[in-house]
Image (cartoon, rainbow, N blue to C red):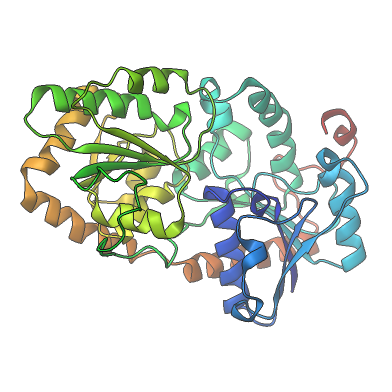
Amino acid sequence: MRIALDGIPLSELRTGVGHYTFELALALARICPLDSIELVSPRPFTSGVESLNETSLPPNLSFNYIAANVFERRWFVHGLPSHIRRTSIELFHGTNYEVAFRRICPSVLTVHDLSLILLPHTHLSRRVRRAKLRLPLMVRAATMIITPTEAIRHEVCHHLGVAPEKVVAVPEAPRKVFRPSDRTGDEDTLRNPGINASYFLAVGTLEPRKNLRALVLAYRELIGTSPHRPWLVIAGKEGWMLDDLRTEIDRAGPDEHIHLTGYVSDAELRSLYSSCLGFVFPSLYEGFGLPPLEAMACGAPVIANRIPSLREVLGDAASFVDAENINELKSAMLGLIENPERRALLSDASRNRAADFSWERTAAMTRRVYETAVRKKGEGGKGKGEGEGSAPAREYF
């Protein structure tokens, strides 16, 4: 099968969706050597793609940058359909909420979560408006839909009116680079020479949905009410609506060591995961939760918010809290400090849980969804909420 995946997530610093897109494409190419796997983008590839050693890539995986002659924002209306026709692509996978609106070939759409619709106050208003216009169109245009968890599958069916048989939950996985690491000789990992002490770690784009302000408040409570003095390290690129977080960090006293690393490399991140007292993930809403699973693969004890998707992914291997309850979050952190036995048990459980996930399994499940989409298109079937017309494209795109 000739398959194209949306390569736009690989045109900027790689975070969750970018990692998902690249790892899925790589695993697909490896387990399906007779398929042609193409990553196609109207923007130049960055994020390390340009430095990849071509000899290390499967011969059936290619990166295709197309200098579009149309406005980039109309790529999914004109540029992509034209490319699909010209190259006889048999299936397109929109890995980041987008597919070609016109049904040139069967398509699969990944909906990672519905935070833009369900938690609009945590996003920029222009992004919320765009999602509310485009996402209903995208789920109708797609032949099949993938979500990373059953929790998000139920949300897509309920909130977007999609027939259950059109949506399949396919779990993601930690990348192979994440495994326990010894920090010896890696003094620059934290970009701060003073941080050789114990620390709690949080990872993710700095934005309101990650609930990092609550983590900072819980950390400050911990420092203020106990004799322990761990650091709090927050790794991730800056996102949006950070004033409240910055204000809380600025209030930190001389005994409160809060360190923002910014965007870090995989090697640095692996070292951070492997050496932390505990990984804390207080996010208000997640579609899957790759950072805590990556931390688990490195043996980190994990504290996570008690929400359906995280409970589904992390199972019994994490310590769950109501992350909007500052005292509960503080108590969980204090428990890891004062109970080394529990910390060791959680660390073992973390590694065992992470071992249940692999990108090869993700790719195999995804490939079966592709087959369903091609068969469904061949049968000419339409499910609830599907339509063929393309007239709304001019209005909303």
